[in-house]
Length: 310
Image (cartoon, rainbow, N blue to C red; front, side):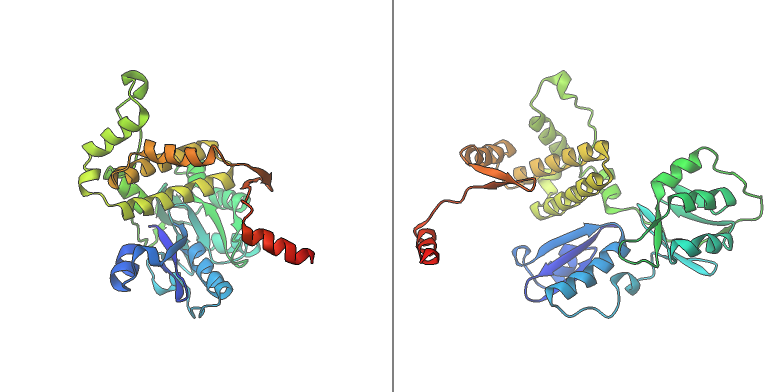
């Protein structure tokens, strides 16, 4: 499930998992009347960020975290509630108290997008070696599900005594990204191999999308949301210094941009050419790792410079 942090300038900052349904249809705002500030599959992260930005923007701060309005992600592990997302499992205690809490939960099993986990002495040791403190709440800590799954792959039944396990009442739902890929709305490795067919890559992307009905039933606004998802994936990959994920994210973003351009009847090549025609003549310099273009000196600018000198 993907959660979106949206901003209606002068009005509010909120969170939803359905931008069009909540902000456009229910609240009546057009797409150009609000902006998406952030997006993430971790409901705890996006919930804390919402309150933080509400305070910084000067809006009324919600009395309750968004994640606490729903119980779907709160799993009861005997006496300990955990939060399970596609990426992480979060424990409701600081690291220095986690081991004792986990030992009290030996035998507890829960499902994640990367497989089923069971709390055993070896998994407790792995968790304690890899757990991280939440950057938004020092009383919470988390592990990455994918990393634990790799640990588990060596022996999924290690030190589990038959009859000693008990299952958590876990609510599991496929993420929007997974569903999108299944339905062919996002790009994966296609059967079309452009190295073999010698067609331009953008032509292959458009053929792939057209075969799946994206241009007949697709919507530019939906593609924009998909683009936000992909750029979020790139950001997370950069933070992890994961080159493979960065490449995948950039590729997915280019595909979404190609389809977005096609839906507004402007080929992606034309968009790129238009942008290049502008930047090719642009001058400037690097400042703190970012290219800052030179600003033209206007009569207003000269006038103000003169006044300051005086």
